[in-house]
Image (cartoon, rainbow, N blue to C red; front, top):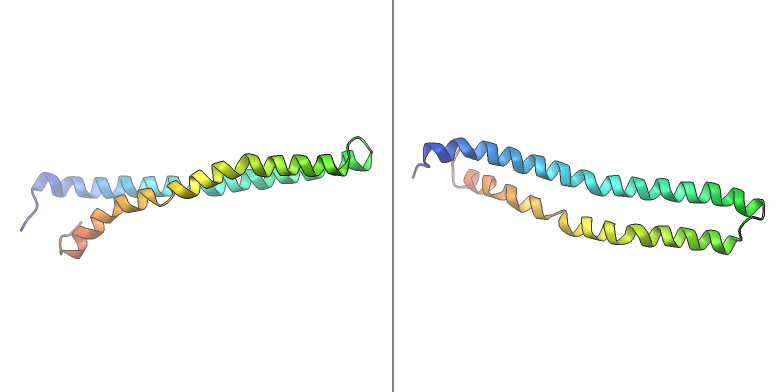
Length: 103
């Protein structure tokens, strides 16, 4: 069974667009994690200076750190949940390869 010519032309474009989608979706989570680390470092460095000078207490610094973790946790959970979704869209190209069609 041979696929129609217009379908054969669209398959590589579709596979390439899905690969781009996967690439972009795999950038989000590391970016959020880097922002979380940068935020933690900023709070710790500036907060340590304030604690040493007596401007804030150590408990307040701990509260800011906990707030920062609470801020990024839902975003990280959402990105972790949606990360596998685009991977399934690439599978049709793999399915064509399994049945012997050149993609």
